[in-house]
Length: 248
Image (cartoon, one colour):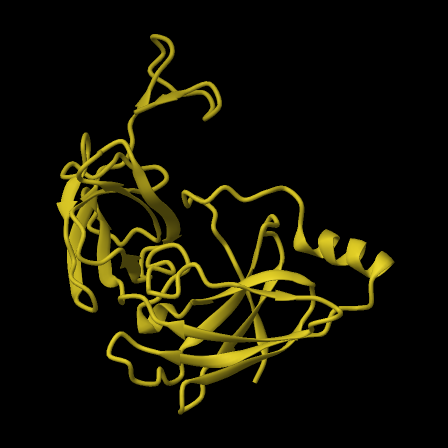
């Protein structure tokens, strides 16, 4: 079964270009036959066993990302097939299955096949690709509440930094607070947690709170946030509009 997944790398350390892959495809169509590339192969896990039912994305190399990328899943024997790749060019295949513990920007292609790529062209429209899965991510669940009211907070924003270099961003993510966040496994990290309209979590303010999750394990944090407080611009005691108010 073939479907497509939208690759969203907003707030991640990867810089996304402004030119969409759709434009690349349009340029190709003006000079070359319509691409109908095929990438097929098999996937094994870290133990050398066939990886069953794992989501995969065919990721173009050397072009900006801004379109729906081909997505498929392995079968019971770990085999996969991208039946219609709509652009010619260089590709790698990455695991992108958050339920299974794989994310394009949290785990990354850090297995032994991390540098492997294939090229599709009108002369060579099919290519074989064999993938060894990276180490599974750690799973982080954050129960986010308003400290003053005890009510749940819907929106969550996290930043994960390297403990060795607290200024180096590993990745950032904005999502619903009910979503499980995939964390690079077996690394010493620093976590920052906040939400729009709230101050940063007191435990993470400053350098961040230490975080270390082993591959495949789960950790839950109960996080209470304080609502931000408006500082009036004058002696009237009011904040006339959000645009003119100061927040902290």
